[in-house]
Amino acid sequence: LIVTLFFFVCGFICADGAATIEEQCSNDFEKLAPCLLYATGKAATPTKDCCSAVKDIKDSNPVCLCFIIQLTHNGSQAIKDFGIQEALLLQLPTACKLTNASISNCPKLLNIPVSSPDYAIFTNSSSSVTVTPST
Image (cartoon, rainbow, N blue to C red):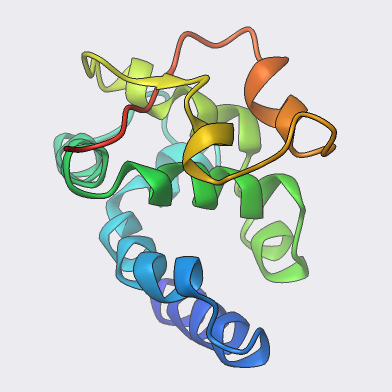
């Protein structure tokens, strides 16, 4: 399952001309492997390893959490095949009890204009999830 997701991401990067955000975040997909049971709804809570990975990404490269949520929202077939649920991804930082994390920062981190439909992914959520830029 993880290997398939990794190859999907690699294929996505290669097919997309290796855009910067895809390159920047490709390793973070692999880091989130311990979160798959939670993200697919097969576990009620994320594991300690999952939360550790989410915290690491939030601290080191928060734009990648935003990118992963955006990619899931836009619904690639591979992600649909895994059964990853966007609502559960949005809840990961809250479920892991992370501090200083808000998805309201995602449009800025991803350079999404207010007029883009993707802007609403991060502003119309009832979630209290927060992702802040690292300094």
